[in-house]
Structures are given as structure tokens and as C-alpha cells.
Amino acid sequence: MSESLSSSAQRVQCALNEHNLELRVVELPGSTRTSQEAADTIGCEVSQIAKSIVFRGKDSETAILVIASGENRVSERKLKAVVGEKVEKPDSDFVLEETGFVIGGIPPVGHKKDIVTYIDEDLMEHKVIWAAAGTPNAVFCLTPQDLLEITNGEIIDVK
Image (spheres, one colour):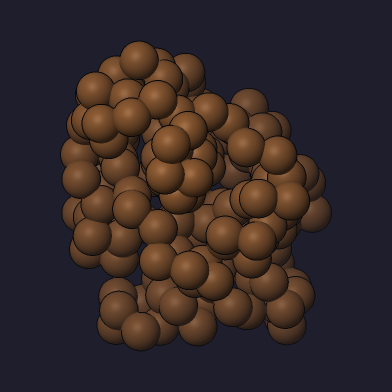
């Protein structure tokens, strides 16, 4: 763990501090860019990784954040049923513009813009989960209840 955080990780830490939950960002020596890399580096199960995936509404062109269990693939069909329009995976420029973070380090909080958030119901089965914290090697540990609180997200079946 580094003593001082990179600017992106520090931005996530500041967003977490607003919730008074004592959640702490750590920067690790190994990559956490993919769910498997994160689980290997942290020493947890892949299902405990809360991966943040940004989608774009095809008609509205609004960002939609899905926080999914690391072992699940998000069903765009199920997401469409929840959001009421077709969704697509946007390019990296859209993700950066909407969140302020690069793909591979997108956190559940601290975005440049407010983003509607959906949480994979499978994450609720764990005592603790791990989420990205703004860079491909920064993470923080939290409970599923903490995730609900900090994101104001809606729990859905995404797989």
C-alpha cells in the first residue's frame, strides 16, 4: 500500500469520506484491471469483485452504471428491460467523459456526473466485496450494504 494516493484514487477516497463509513482506498503492487487479476492480487474470490461497467442508452445516450459480480456477464437484454431502452457498450472516450475515470479502474463513486446505478443481486451474498478505486491497481473493501448506501443503486438480476 502506498502512503500517498494517485490523484484518481484520492478523488475516490474523498468521495468515500463523504459517507462517513471509514472505507479506505489502497493501491496495490499488482494489477486489478480485470476481475481475475483483482481477485488474484487481493486474495479473494472472483465473485467478490464488484466490477463497474458503463453502458450507454441507445436512444437517450445517457450513461448507465452496472456494478456486477466479477464472475457474472451482464445481460444487455435484462438491462434493457430495467432501463426501458436498448443499451450498448460505449467507447473509452464516452466512459472517461461521463465518469472521469479510465476503463479498468472505474469506481462505484466519485464520477464527474451523476450516473444511474444498478447493482448485481449476486454481490449481496457476500460479507465483503472489493471495488475499483480510480486506477487499474487501486481498490477498496466494503460490504454490499455499504455499496447500496454510497451509490443509491438499485439491486437487479444482471446475469
